[in-house]
Length: 364
Image (cartoon, rainbow, N blue to C red; front, side, top):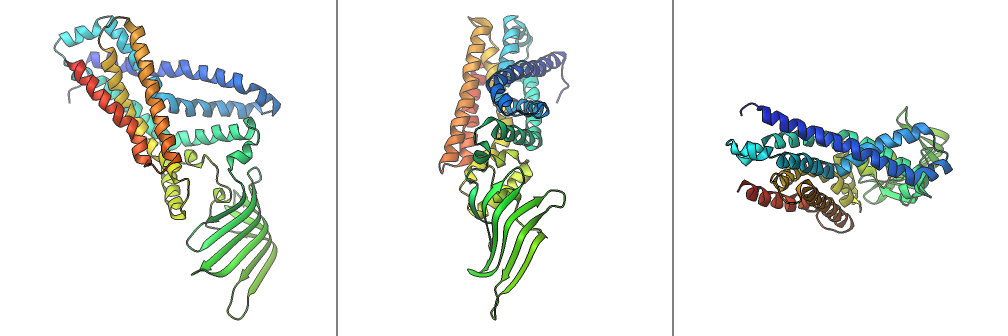
């Protein structure tokens, strides 16, 4: 592959710079709108300033990742239209460079952005998502703690082939569950049962403290009972198993999310499609950078009546259509038995066809 020419470097620099400026322009607007909507609730709940500052750091990452296809599309439309209006593209193509070769720096830029978005989706966005959602449910929604945990009363779950846990209620602030029990069965026959009036997670020691601990071991000649006012133990289940958070999938890195999905499949979780949609989107969203870049260049590379305004109007319509269709198929997969894999990749497939059609016409 030949080295980048001066024109390639110029276009690549404009591509990345315009995209960065677009983020810097729109993210503060989003923050201002969000503050205006939520400032009364923040004051009412006396939210500490450091938590608000951290929330808006997470807000920036969360929403930039969610709306990045729109920012990317508009930035390419913007600077490519300026090149077209200044007849720079005509001069480049008249020099003997093919339209496919002209697209090379755009695709390099899309590769860089896709790689960054992929890494962010794997490791950074999950952390931001947890902080963003936790703040909203804790401080900005009435009954948010209950909504966050879904139905956090009378939680009964199978955690392995032989073990079942039950808690009456769960407190997220103290990480304490009440009226806890764990049953171990062998071929549908109870082997032992552990109960406690409450069970508390110890983050530093990575174990649980059981209060009013009782263990009944079932024997052929009689049951064996063990009691203690307080006992520390380690279990195979996670803290989230006591009261799973509704947005748990968004807060996990790709490796942990994959392990979480496999665990939930074995348990027959009813929310498995929700988790799969989150998992597949980590890979589909970066690919959309290439598709939207090709569409944007094909639409705006030629000078047209209405100039940049017409190109931006088309760009906004296409970008929001992409986000809308992506959201519709995502919700459809979450609420029905429709394949999450097909639902997540359908927008890329449909707009990929559009990109191929527009690129072929642009070449002509």
